[in-house]
Image 1: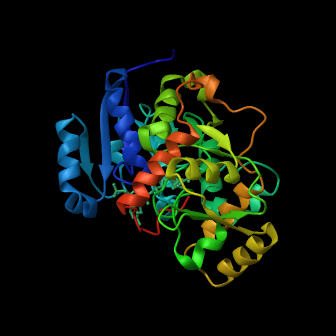
Image 2 (image 1 turned 60 degrees about the vertical axis):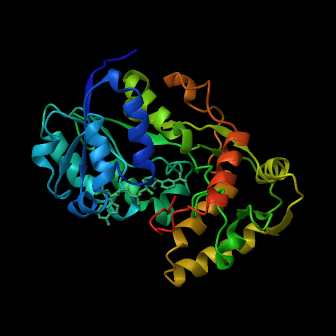
Length: 327
Ligand SMILES: NC(=O)c1ccc[n+]([C@@H]2O[C@H](COP(=O)([O-])OP(=O)(O)OC[C@H]3O[C@@H](n4cnc5c(N)ncnc54)[C@H](OP(=O)(O)O)[C@@H]3O)[C@@H](O)[C@H]2O)c1
């Protein structure tokens, strides 16, 4: 076990994945020192109740301009879970962090697809900002860093892998609990490795990475909850809903054409088309996952857990519709 009682500062902690990560950090708060978040004035106003609850759990809440977090950075380890819209801002934080001796570790906002999977990865449009952030970290001399690479989320939230997509987007792959139908890419038999965000597999993996610094420093940690195929996902939905589902297929070639058109038309979902194609091509599969390096091999959620949660999410109709929820 590595050093403990680190002071943690989290950017983006009220967002989709940040909230799950913070929840798991709080479950393990005895392992850490101060736990703080920095949030924008807009969020401080719109999510005041959520912030009040966090304060009552001992979280320090800094409201500020995320373009200039100098004072706040002092004395913390930094975990960033910011959304894709503000990924580039992290480069300023990294440079600031390097100038503050007490900041020794930085977790950039990754939590998704491996942006260094193969020689083609460097050309993928959705990876570009994360690639620049990694370069900024590599250029520092005093900071340690960890890229937590989780693969896609097995989640029923809108636009996540187990969600029911709008009619116009179903062709890129969907699982619709109400319609009992699914669209799979190619023959649906290609393996994909997933991480569950609910019940905090993502959070658990980040906490473990924090607690095992020797194993996770200056590297990508390629971790996940389980590996399965889209066809097996349908089978699990059929088992849990008790009905046969209607399944249609989109070829990889067709997905690539749709992806090109989406970028051409500057469609907001273009990054999702690309990520779906990368996942269908096997871009989340590794000879060996890194869970064992951080003592996270056991008690990961299963396909059955993820499908159960997706059914609840879809039936409750509470899926977020924010188009920032891009993988
Ligand atoms: N593997 C997957 O399937 C998957 C799925 C989704 C996301 N991800 C990855 O997870 C990471 C976090 O994504 P997310 O969906 O959780 O993010 P998000 O909910 O869209 O945003 C997280 C936080 O970032 C800050 N933020 C976002 N947009 C902003 C803007 N325009 N201006 C200022 N602040 C802004 C906000 O912080 P405050 O409100 O506190 O100021 C927000 O709560 C990303 O790196 C993303 O690529 C992966």
